[in-house]
Image 1 (cartoon, rainbow, N blue to C red):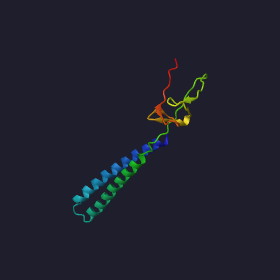
Image 2: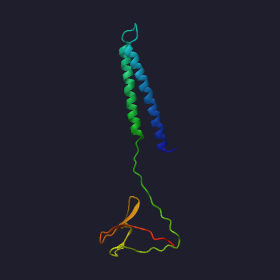
Image 3: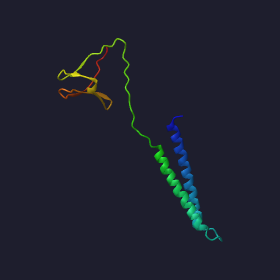
Image 4: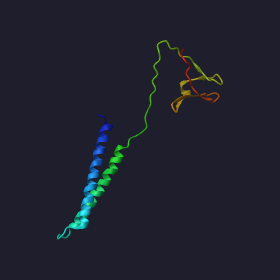
Length: 131
């Protein structure tokens, strides 16, 4: 499995453990707040244990949330499959006729944009039909 899958599984398990810790801590706090009849000092110890369980559950939720965050930046690679009889022609600017290179073409919002280094004209590169 990929490491991202293991990270997801670990985060889910951590969240389940945190939920159970919060539930158990809450029940212990509720029980300690009512006090055990006939036993002195149990309420204070129970309150302390319940508070520790609640805080531990909250800390686990924070760690699980941090663990599931991943870098959303993605690298996109464009691959062009050219047929065997393709001839490479020199590109020229539509406005001034200046020679263009691949450095003058940038992808902007998924469309190839050409910026002429001579006249600073910017336009979208279009492909002529092949028929």
